[in-house]
Image (cartoon, rainbow, N blue to C red; front, side, top):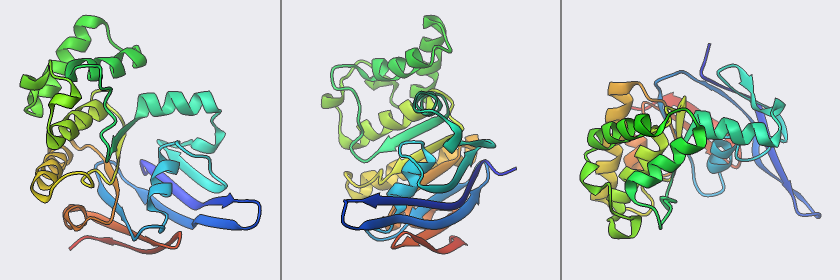
Length: 229
């Protein structure tokens, strides 16, 4: 059974005058442990598709199933719980809480999940920050970090709850090429060593070159799906 099943997926927006088909009859499946990029130019539907997989937006028609659970069957509150417990998100703007330290940003995520007591949270966070080589930054706030350091913290925040997959929307867009390459190498290492499933939305060649598989979209339609070479 595939980890993610996307079947005849459509997302239509209406402004009262005309309808825009942001995603138009897209189908594909993703196995656990894949390292995939949804690639295409601006307006291709890649970010919308990522948001639909992450239960961040409502589906017009078709379906998205994760671990055999159809997202269309979930209520608004159930979708929020699903995102909290099952999906790790990495954004181009980092989206860290500025008044919290690095440690507290991760602790906040675990407090929401209610899976661990305080001592367990501390052990889990320490282990992950050390793995990502940012334990020394644990007491700093986001404003005291470089862009690359903030993105490493964002990766840690996405992983700390042990999600079934990680969705990354243009994660290198606000990084210089050297820092972006370093961050991508880290995610690739996590994919290979820990079998973490990553789905990217990007037109960045740095990401496309490292992907195991490239799903290409244009004007909301799937136009290519192949192993990267």
